[in-house]
Amino acid sequence: MIEIQNVRKSFGSLEVLKGIDLTVAKGEVLTIIGGSGSGKSTLLTCINGLEPIDSGKILVDGTEVHAKSTDLNKLRQKIGIVFQQWNAFPHLTVLENVMLAPRKVLGMAKADAEAMAVKQLTHVGLADKLNVYPTRMSGGQQQRMAIARALAMSPDYMLFDEVTSALDPQLVGEVLDTLRMLASEGMTMICVTHEMKFAREVSDRVAFFHKGVMAEIAPPAELFGAPKDADLQKFLAATH
Image 1 (tube, rainbow, N blue to C red):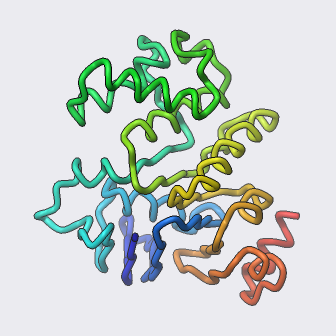
Image 2 (cartoon, helix red, strand yellow; image 1 turned 90 degrees about the vertical axis):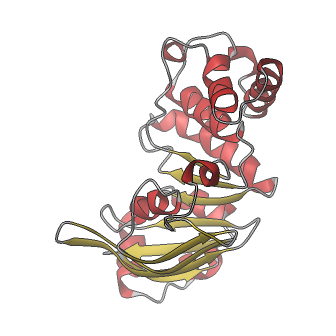
């Protein structure tokens, strides 16, 4: 599981995480909602160790992410992260993009890496795009390729940071469908999203972040149906 204990994080004088406490169980889907600047995305990069924390602890399966003794590269193999921007290598085909990390990081043999890449690209509905270059694909297809690339490392946890926010509205659905599929297969996921319908449908719990604080966390029916926090009530009213 992922355990977050009293985590604080500032950028200069701006405190973006103000003592976050949160535990995400194996197989759970947690979505995080809230306005921009509420600390949602920062939390994901802290969980993955891409961003240091000022105080508190983050534990992934009992390993303290920010301890000096922790091998972050090894830990990150367990935690896939997909960002708003897909950052593909344009000179490599889709297949080569997905094969790269298993070969370089895991030291997988070429045939094994290729088999894994084909499997994951097929999984996200891109079996017909293996030899295409990323620039020839739609944004939604590129984002699904980024998900396949993360899955090719066989992670235990997946973090998704606003993965649909850079997409045209008509492409959002295909990426959300991919996330729904992963959720139904039992992947442990933390999704930062502004897609309320998606949060309502796939989450075991939804957390509302406001000004660096986790103001409310509850199952979706409860959080959307009977929000207790005044800022959450305002936020939901504005998103309808």
